[in-house]
Length: 213
Ligand code: SAH
Image (cartoon, rainbow, N blue to C red; front, side, top):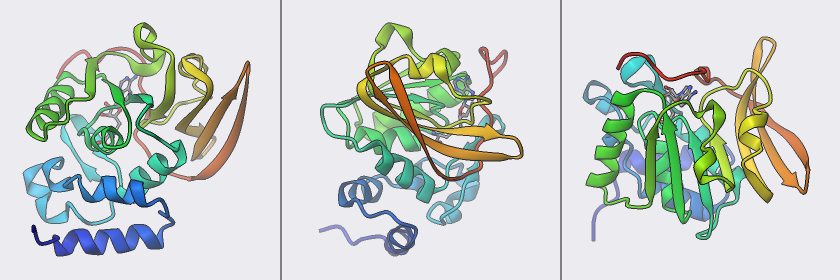
């Protein structure tokens, strides 16, 4: 049997302290080695509970936030999930362990390609990537059981929430004046109820495709 990485044990303990109660979510994080998703120069900080820089001026999210967002989605293995903002691919890899299929959109080609190489190396074959503007969702694949935004929307992301199935759940950071709030949306028929979860800090959701990189 493989010895558990002591850095991972410590991370799991801090996630527990931060409110991660769902054992399946914890298991998904434990089986997703974060050092494979961070630039080599940050390898020694891969298991710290903090966001880290990745290419293209973006960030890999803090593990606690990844866990809490995943937990808020209440996933099961029948779920078809949309993620906006592939970034390093870490959040997508965690989702892929709990859902049937993950569709992940990223505006930077470099990041999308790098993430795809990681998914392949880890044999995560249920993640479909796309390079483009995720602020319009992924119309060709809609509707989705679950949707997650990992970049902060300037206002309620209605165009994306349109692609949520009846009974579906979405989580997204949304700008509120000087703050960003993580919001959970639930669609019931044509109405959407929303609940604030906590204050967060994400990179902004940028409209349009990236010109370079
Ligand atoms: N889920 C990522 C977090 C990456 S940060 C991870 O686990 O590492 C958010 C990402 O959203 C960035 O890579 C950024 O380029 C991307 N992004 C921002 N606006 C976007 C848009 N309109 N469409 C697609 N991706 C976008």
